[in-house]
Length: 253
Image (cartoon, rainbow, N blue to C red; front, side):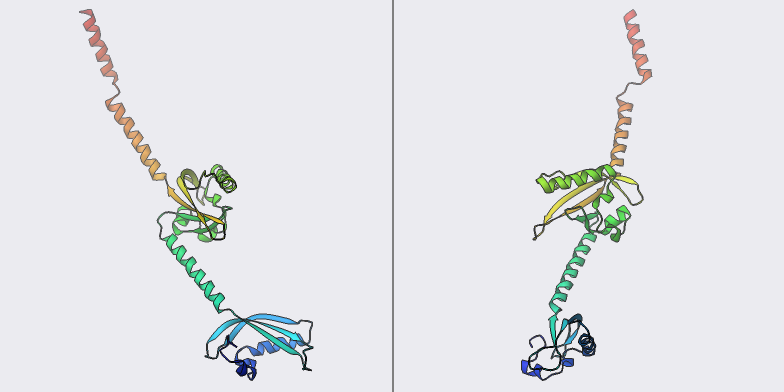
């Protein structure tokens, strides 16, 4: 009675069509049940509140052929209000969308993985860097972005940490060789942080930084330093011969 906004007295005098607009469907189901071995049926439908508001319900129709005081089959309709469940789903979807939007706002590629290394969340920057779509990433292992050597090592580090608690990759940044969808490899820096969930499970957030330009800059600096050293600190052959000639002249005087 509370679900539909009526008193018990009001409901007892009403036809079920007043609270369930799809009563015809229920009647058809009831007729089928009466002529078969099926004793109950469940489906989602729309119900009406006294105020005129419609809401989704789960209705279960059960048949009782031996109900006391009735010579006709009696059907029991059990209603479950799905509004709270749907509101909860909407809230979760909103939080997921907010989380995804925040991840996408980051300029750095980001991944969220579970204890097995399965990718749960990925942002746009990661998709752009590695050439995969979000659908191709989700529910795949994070090893798909590593070369073969680093992929095997990463899985071992994760398994060892979960088993022993010893940190080898968690909470630190380390260099890796990554692999794009097209198979090309490039150097990255991977940082992994741990998040403990209320149910006791763990998820891990990975942050990726492309080190390609950094390595090129270091190579240029090394080459420049080598040129400077050769130009100003390495004696030229002409200077060496001249010094030897002068020393020889002094010795013969």
